[in-house]
Image (cartoon, rainbow, N blue to C red):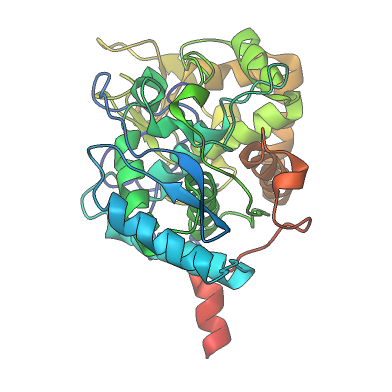
Amino acid sequence: MQAFASSLRAPVRRAAFSSARIPRASFRSSYRRYTTQPEAPKSKTALYAGLGALAIGGVAFYLYSSSSDTLGTTAKSAAQSVKAAAHFVPTKEDYQKVYNKVAEALDEAGDYDDGSFGPVLLRLAWHSSGTYDKDAHTGGSNYATMRFEPESLHDANAGLNVARGIMEKIKQDFPWISYGDLWTLGGVAAIQEMSGPKIPWRAGRIDGLPKDVTPDGRLPDASQGQSHLRDIFYRMGFNDQEIVALSGAHALGRAHTDRSGFDGPWTFSPTTLTNDFYKLLLEEKWIWRKWNGPKQLTDKKTTSLMMLPTDYSLVQDKTFKKYVKAYAEDESLFFKDFSAVVSKLFELGIPESQFTTTEKWSLKTLDEQKEESK
């Protein structure tokens, strides 16, 4: 899954497939980024800084600092201190406002990929969470360590400087939110605004320091097979069913030759979350693509789609395949399991006592809010 996300141009028509459907939010486009969606060959970028605990007038507050490529550190710190001094405690409604800001930003992509920032923001949330090691109790979304080198420079994170830049602009409007909360909430917004299921979410992540950066190699490598997938995901605490459910995120997006080296979309609707990833895996005839790039598969019928070696391993493994079949036959089952496993992914490495609420929130989509306002 090292290239679990990418993008090219406009999406190819799905009319040729029986699995085609009209997107719930057709005016919204976005392609999804899963595990590793690289950018230009080893694009190197380090953004933002961490969180330090300070006390002013007996009031503790978090100070978010930034690296050289992020402006406004002083202003953001001042705003943060004002909030704390006023005893500002964010509510669900405050986080809904952040969600809305992210959702509105999805359609500001212009010519970027398929016209949406949704997939790259989802990939940021995924990669910031997928570094968790259950035995070492390190990694995960709690510290948002991708802001620092060398993690920001890991091959698996190539291209995510785009997502971090988008989120930094939103952070300036909401200086009180931690980067970990912001990035994962962005992932929630991306999924829900791309016609996906509701993703239960809650706040409580704190931002760490450069010393908390995780080692390279914790995210999946798309060129590998099923044993590699198990090694990576078992380390996070997932089982076989959850591995397959997470893999369905490849219904969205494309691979980029200038990032992962891989090329092409997984489905004919890379901006809408469906169970087509599983349907196509089972229904299409997949052959190895003859080209100068890394080993990947293409559909024999149109040669316009792609599958990664990690994707194809899901139908080569007996246990994985039974879940692929189940999700191909029942999209509602896929959505239910996908919602649960993504919510779990986004909370890896966070102590229960750190969350601001025991209840997970269901945040409303922009469409839902428009309907309510009528």
